[in-house]
Length: 140
Image (cartoon, rainbow, N blue to C red; front, side, top):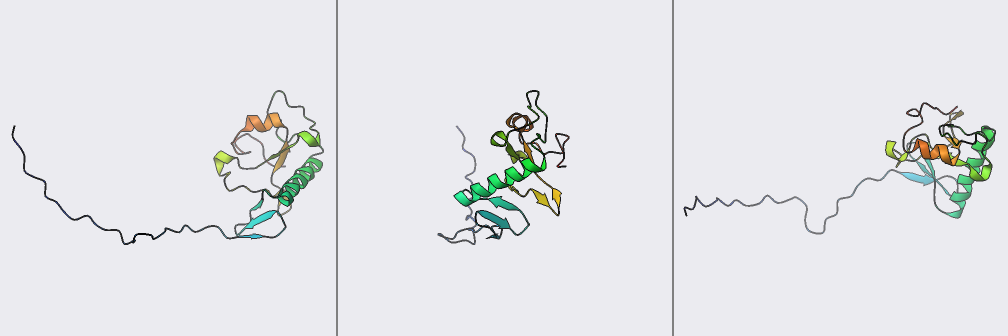
């Protein structure tokens, strides 16, 4: 059995970081304008998980329900009841989780124009994580 040439050993290049250094990622700047709502620098608003945030989320859902006169905003599913009682109404975000939904925006109006919708559970399930434009619907 023949052996080849031994490999030449070289020193490993060292990282400029030292042991214990932490890589810091910049976080988006955020403030709390209304109790329970987090406002980001890019204009997004997100209701947090506190009791005040949950109440604000429910208030916004009710405002959309009144704006749409209780009618489902999507009407995609075959089992859509068209008229949705307030208790069964769901908050329909313009951008789903798969389409930048991690940057959730809970505003219901932007510059006086409707942004998000209220829909029934079944249509929300059919829509999934697609955007409203991908479903052929836009906020009216």
